[in-house]
Length: 347
Figure 1 (cartoon, rainbow, N blue to C red):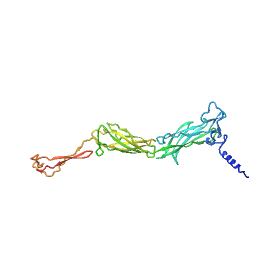
Figure 2 (cartoon, one colour; figure 1 turned 30 degrees about the vertical axis):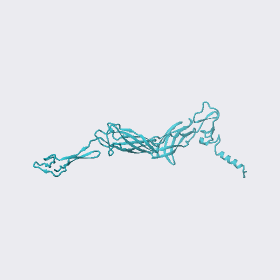
Figure 3 (cartoon, helix red, strand yellow; figure 1 turned 120 degrees about the horizontal axis):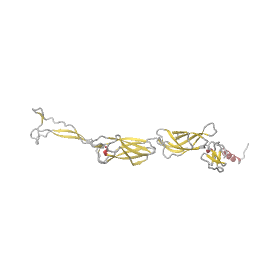
Figure 4 (cartoon, helix red, strand yellow; figure 1 turned 135 degrees about the vertical axis):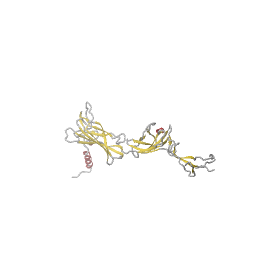
């Protein structure tokens, strides 16, 4: 059989048209139907026609002035923020006729492989909150979210499934790193500052890498002081990329009166996705006086007298026998002093 050249393009168009169901064609989902038509529960593409009073509700179409049930449609609402163990819920919308039995929703978050999954049994028509319960550790980046609805049509002997169009989202399951440090204060000596009524600045660098970004940081004393607050909210001092420096104004009265013990602190930081990281540091506030150690005799030129005591020749301030003069030697912060006897001056 031979075809004329002009008939070949017409045949090609006919074949292409046959690949897409017509208004009364068969369908599995509404995506199989032409624009403006929808897949009925019987698997036939229908278009709006006639007037239905009252108006058909979601899950139905007015066809021939009668409401006809459609096959369910499932869609995912794009998350407004990052997905993470702290923010695991995704809104999934189901449009289904009353006669359709809804059996469950499976939710998957993936890139080139699955990064998080969740499910919901016995969903309802309308909006459903599906919670992601399985996160791949340290997952971060752009992902797609897709929902699959399992249902049974009236009179059917087996369940059917329909999937949503994937929507983009951002996943972040990585905690920020936190580094705590104390910048040099104007009155600091070897890292120690005096206890006053003022404050001491403590800083923390919070680095969230490629994650959702630092959001907040709080400094707390490991052992809450009696005379000052235990926790201090940080303020952002600077930010660059995924890292931020937070500043904390800590009351110096947090140190106990008369003490010079280092004070341990912990900074807890949270990123936009709710992941928490922590870092440790030490605050050095000195309110203790110098300590003088025991006196030690260092001169060996004394003479044991008849009374059994050691006597030394006096100087011009003490023409007779005199006691040894003494001096003290103090180390730096925290001050510790040791007294040392000085030998008498020769005459």
